Amino acid sequence: MSENDQIVQFLKANPAFSLSMLEKEAGIPSGVLSKVLRGERKLNTDHIKLLRPVLYKYGLRHDDSPSKAKVISIVNHKGGVGKTTTAINLGKALTMMGKKVLLVDMDSQGNLSQGLGFDEPEKQVVDALLKEEPLPIFLVSENYDLSPSDLELAEADLELVQNIGGFNRLNKVLRPIKDQYDFILIDCPPSLNIITSSAMVAADSCLITLQPEIAAVKGLDKILTRIGNIQEEINEKLRVEGIVFTLVNKRLVVHQSNMEYVRESLPGFKIFDSMIRENVSLTEAQSAQMDIFSYAPDSNGAKDYYKLAEELLQN
Ligand SMILES: Nc1ncnc2c1ncn2[C@@H]1O[C@H](COP(=O)(O)OP(=O)(O)O)[C@@H](O)[C@H]1O
Ligand SMILES: [Mg+2]
Image (tube, rainbow, N blue to C red; front, side, top):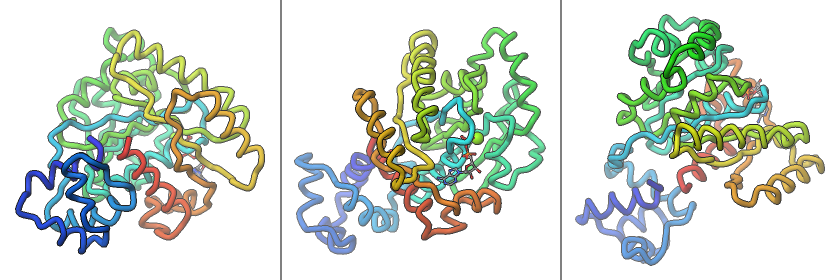
């Protein structure tokens, strides 16, 4: 459900609220909310940003939406293109918008888990994949949970390939917990192996992080083909959430032209307007085992990931 629809649903369920009082408190023009309720227009991003804190105060919660979690796999078979950084910080930004988020570390390098302070998890994703145990879940902060991994996951590859249903294991262990979250973000390894495929089988959509370098852009068709295959063969509902440019240096002409090229050559795909600029605070935050909003709330990294989360909620 889009955030506009969620707000409409909340206002309709609470007819006692004075719309003009809410508009005044949020600082949005009077009359907007009644038009939105009549379906004559939609709230724009600025309205939603201003309304959000006011409505949370009056009880708007993520669980006003009865739907199950949206499961998004963050994919790219290249390493160092911002998948893990996006999982951590997009996830955190979504919690700041009242959503409950689970991050699932599906990379045996465990960067996601380490980046959140879980260096040697006592239980991890692989236990659920291979031993049919429930997915182990740890609280990182309010509404922000992690299912961690480390090197042990590397051993799961072969066993999953040899097992009937190996591709479906992650999907199976996520199923019973989906109604506890708004978003489940799966951080994938830098490879199109069975781990990434099983994340695609478990997902509603794939978010592709893409550095606007020529080599990265050239590899894009491989990812899109794999997503297409999984959709055709196993997971009909799978779609591409969108492509988000990461590690962008807007001053580089080559970055600008590569981004333009991707936009022009993939007209049928959502390319996020929000892009993640190169920002050293993002690396520092990861080393400090913090999300960017706790580490450097005024940094470009924090601004960019917040915007990306807002745009994702409009999707
Ligand atoms: N926008 C950014 N600006 C600067 N450094 C970044 C940015 N995004 C990621 N990094 C850094 O680049 C490295 C690779 O990013 P990471 O998210 O781990 O990529 P992946 O998960 O795709 O391998 C990490 O050290 C990370 O801190
Ligand atoms: Mg990674």
